[in-house]
Length: 384
Image 1 (cartoon, rainbow, N blue to C red):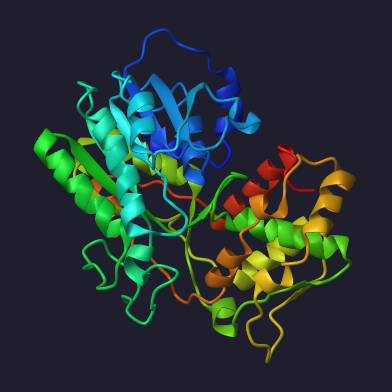
Image 2 (cartoon, rainbow, N blue to C red):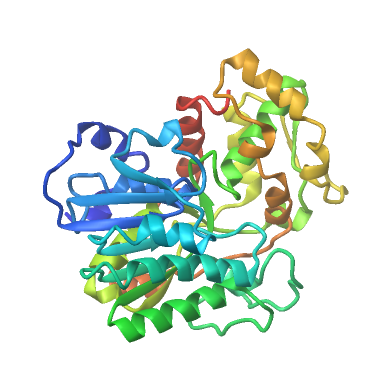
């Protein structure tokens, strides 16, 4: 049976405990952004004994100190601010055994110049020194089709989005990253792949855009204050279809592209392969936190979740203390601004046809993925 068909949500938890450190590696990965949603999933997935291209040695790079929840993976962790050229060179250049780069990092303010500098710093530190480097995976996303958060979203493509759609005219740091990727791989004889995942469902308390964590925290606060679970988004977003991508699936997608000849030098969308509506996920969220579900209130305008939650820092501190959770601040585990954006988007749908043509058939059930993420955050004691 194909490895991609045999995967299931959360299947890595048992396997990673069974895995042992090996003395000889076939491939060596550098994950830039290892504490993020996809970065941490890559770190887990690359440890499985049956992962294609393995056994893998894994270097993980992130700005913050090594988090305790990532310690269960056999990652050689490197704390490095990749926006700093000299620091990146001193810490990354000595890693001469790298064979594959997985770049899943970005600067939160979407600055084109700074994001370009970060990516270029990594490539300039690795390419001249890693003689066995083969492939570079670059993760971007559906903002390629709908534009950045802070730009005019009237200039967008109609869904379903296909990989051949041209770039939007507005500035987008994705374009800068792609241009660097194409230039560096072209002149150095390397292969590449670009991955455009949909809204990502996954586990990471360090992510800038973790929608499942954000909604879980919102639900926990509603429960703590004995309030019903009201949907603050628009009526259109409540009823329309959208798609998502499970973080484990995105990790598998990138590993597939890194090792399968049919995926070389290609751009791919990445979604679970099904569709969902927020009205359905909202019911699941209410069930998981045993809340009264109100959902969208007919006639209501969108209410900013960021505004609703702006004075809830002390409430979250109390929830953490009462439930014996990992010590976190509200701003670290919830991105309410991101939920506001998600709850006004309509019909954001990407085609997965090209993936099937090139041989990737991985999929996930979005509802099951959502529940699994909540369970994992509970297991690590980040939410009650």
